[in-house]
Amino acid sequence: MNAKKLASVRANNEFGGNNMNQKRNGTMFLVSVSMTFIFFIVLIMTGGGGDYPTVMWILFIGFGISSLYFYKKAKEILEEKRIEKQHETVERLQRLPNYKSSQEYTSVDGDVTLSIDETNKKISFVSLNSYKDKVYSYHDILKSEILTDGVSVTSTNRGSQLGGALLGGLLAGGVGALIGGLSGSTTSQEKVKKVELNIIVNDTVNPIHKIVFLESYFSGYAKDSQEYKDGYNTAYHCHQLIGVLIRQADEEDKRKEISTSSSNSQGNVSVADELRKLVQLKDEGIISGDEFEAQKKKLIG
Image 1: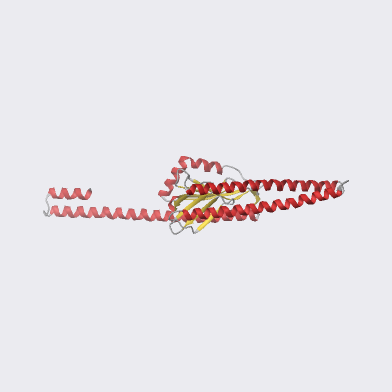
Image 2: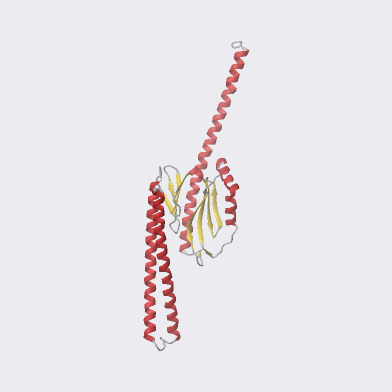
């Protein structure tokens, strides 16, 4: 196992240990809150604890204090985990050859980071669930799309002939079916559980990269809530930035197409002019018919 993979495995093991601690503290927190609530109801129903008011009040206060303790511990573990993920991401970005990150956007769980190298015109995806990081040029970006609860909200894709052909090939290969399946689902108009950015790249092995900027496993976030606004605004900003990179790649493709077309046109004019000169030389008797045919073959190729 190489050093890069070993470092990633070690980091994932550490994250796994923190996950277990987080789940354990989370479970204890829920138990404490539940017991506090139960004792509170009992206190109300019995008029202050019934035959054992002192015991009931002690238990009520005890479970209340334990709830606060486990809540605090869970927050501390979450913060430690966030910092560890951040450090791991920074280290992996620094190890990328010929790459200098100028902008970074990280998913809400900290597992996936989109980075942009404006100097070398590259983007990268660092996923802490994988030991192999992906680096692509701007020209490899084919499409960017925001989805809320699986429904496409807005998208931008390559418009040049080359970019369109590449995207069409990926869609024909099965990516289109996946995106279509996501777009066909339904979402609540009042609350949203998930906001994600999907970026399709010219990579047949791993064509879709997902970055989740908002996620709830419960009832979801109201669209007028600050959590939803922050998550969606981050996704939208990132989407617009990817759109700029796509337009830059399209403009470069168009300039190349114009340059190639101009060169071909100039080449054709040059051959035609040379042929006219040869015909004139032949008509004036300066060159023979055989010489004319030989020179014509050279020009036409």
